Length: 125
Image (cartoon, rainbow, N blue to C red):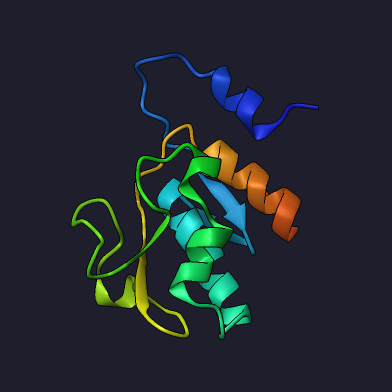
């Protein structure tokens, strides 16, 4: 069985990956997929704090140079979803989700499928 990681390794170097994914019947790009998964998690766990989200989604797990979730005062413009309607309210702070995803999206998808039983599929072109 091909994993998401194996599928992305087949892509040629030097070409941008515009893959889309299906989650809860909607089509998402890489960054918006991560945002949707984290927003859904917070909606289902309204008492979760910003710090707990950072523990649940550790950047090392996803080979990311940026925190996956960051308090808005620490989030860098251009690297996070910072529009007002994109911010997520946790129990103790408003947070932003990073929009910086490339091949490391495979680690995120595998992680949430395994640990959170989230169903995500690669969309057909």
